[in-house]
Image (cartoon, rainbow, N blue to C red; front, side, top):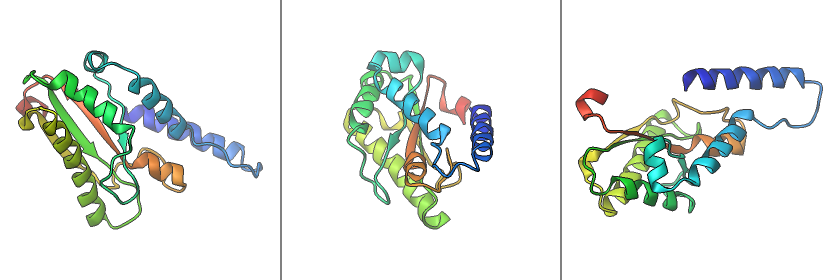
Length: 169
């Protein structure tokens, strides 16, 4: 995944410099790629999510713990394949945009991940099956210099595994 991100940044940079004489705004390929990926993954059934081990990221409103309405069907699909299967583990990683201090964004990203965990537990998932992490603004997906870029970076991403926790971290 890191290599893909580096490659996409390199492509974006080359497009940016190649079009420097063009006064029009060029769309960020990372944002477009992430949107397409999330749209494709959001169409999966609960079973398909589990089998593919790919879950779309969910977004939050600016400076808020409030989930976007599009997040609830995704979370319900996660609950669909996790309820009653104690072997499945879920890693929930919260991220923020670059607005605010590191301390605040660390808190906010962890609080967002905890909000996801609370929702999933309310749907019947065993709490110890979910680990949460908050990375604040330290792992941006794209440049944070536009409203679209900041919105893309305000996300929670998921990793599904059936390995024991001591084998994962």
